[in-house]
Length: 178
Image 1 (cartoon, rainbow, N blue to C red):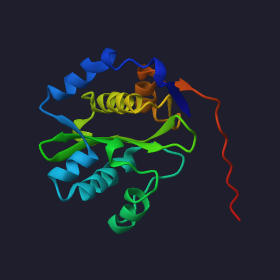
Image 2 (image 1 turned 60 degrees about the vertical axis):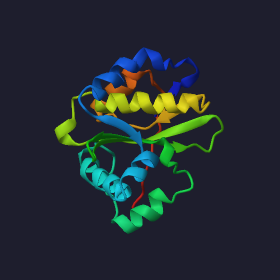
Image 3 (image 1 turned 180 degrees about the horizontal axis):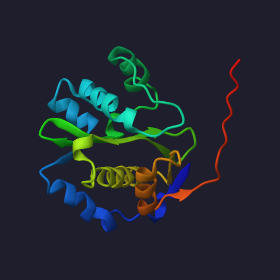
C-alpha cells in the first residue's frame, strides 16, 4: 500500500504529462460525461476492465463478472462515484481508465483500477490518468489518497513512485484453505 499527501500535490507541475496525451488526439473525460455521450458507456467500461484485468499482476487472478453482476456490484456500489472515474478516449473508444473510490476514513480517497489497453500502452496514458485523478481529488478537498499494488506490478509501482506516492508498512494476508 502507498499513500500520497494531496495537500502538497501541485497539479500545475504535471500538466505537461496530461497535455502530451491530449496531443495524441485523445481526450480525458469522466464516466459521467461519457454516459451523456454514449448510451453504452457502462458496457464499454466493463469491456475495458475485462480486457485489461487479466494482464494485471495480483496475488489472485482478477476476474470481472458478467455485465449484469458488474453493474450491481461495481456501478451500484455505495462508494462508486462516476465523477471520479476518468477515461481516456480515442474517438468513442475507451483506451484507458483510472478510478477513485470513497474511503471510510475522513479526508481520504482510494484508487481503484488503472488500466490501459495493450495497443495504447507506453504512451503516457496511465500517468496522465493518475494526475487527472490526483487533481480531481485535491480539488474535492481530499487530503490524502491511497493505492494498493503487488510488488510484481513494476510498471504501476514506477508510475506511482514518480507521481509521489510513498510506501506504507506492508500487510501480510494469510489464507487457510479448509
